Length: 559
Image 1 (spheres, rainbow, N blue to C red):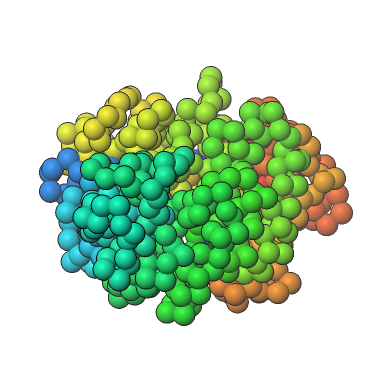
Image 2 (cartoon, helix red, strand yellow):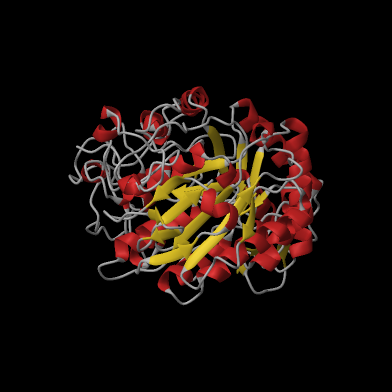
């Protein structure tokens, strides 16, 4: 079985020995033959500990089941940590992610657990707090940071705070509520009037704000008592070893008021960073870049890059050929400049798919579909910041429509009754996965899994991919070829390792089309070495006679 899937050339290893000085292939290189000819391991994966790298998003419910109840659990996450990162940068059998983001793990009434009933506990479906502590310890031993989903916009209607508030309102009839008698009436947004996004309380003439769902009452984050609750809650989770928070629905804290939401995040950021200065805070602000970038003025370092994600994002449009690759290069540069100007210590948060989106395997059709999925994720993983990978995307899992379909069980094995396999959530429509299970894909050198693994490990070999400043090379980019350069920032921002100093600039080319493309290399580039390659299938990157020849959907890195 061939160990490598995607061609990853390092230190000037080139197909057909097209660059001078490559030398004779060693026996080790011959054993590692894959889509290209050789893999040269002079450039090792680097273990830089900062807020950059790659994170792996896990829906615990659908990940790995250890107690045979059909539901994934925290012990299952612990059991599969070596799959994500075994802690040894010398090995290449793991994905190479240095962080995990756990979707909500707190007690809830639903399968998705975004309606929290207790902020300081673990949902029994997932195990116990002891299980969580063991998982965190195992993560930290491997150099994996733990980010937990933090639902601060609303609680469950079954949360004691809400239950007490409703009980009190029902007891006072038409009298005005007295917060000194029941402080929880100010924890939520109650009204005697029916408003858009409000739900009536049965048995009295009060309404409450519930923008997402009647069973998710919105919290009043302007209330100091509510803020004190979350101050205590974050302290609780820090004591249990978490490294940061993914802020759910941050654009909805105060509906339609980005300024208030930004101030809420500033309060949260200041409060959290006073306790743990290197804590990660990444916010979900599901809107356009001109809006979500403004939230960085709160001091948080990251907002997810929604403009690049999903079936209608920049990446998909480029790979479909409806938006030029040259425009994608320019967008990457402009995004970094915009966000850096708002917060010099910002950390990009590129992702291609998350749990609320249709999975990427359904974005493309025809014979080139797999290659298009691969190069789309490859582009995402070439962006600066901390890239985010949604579980199962590395296998090309499918899922669309209702939310449970987007969160189907991780396909460890084809046999759905195999050890560790989870059952789909109620309402999910299980389907045949087009590219098979992990068991199958690990054996296929040209699988999506192996391509994804190589693209992440490429980030780990060349720290500038994640940490460099991006410049669009307009004279080398075309509608089908994206050309960018990554250089060491002139000023190393807070949160970025000083180890980045001294790294040599990288020039990256991506063919986003299904046809071979040729780039003429002039000036300093004509002297550069080809140090990294990502390709789909058995295609080859070539450098000859001053030209870089990129196969369909191929990527080349020169230094």
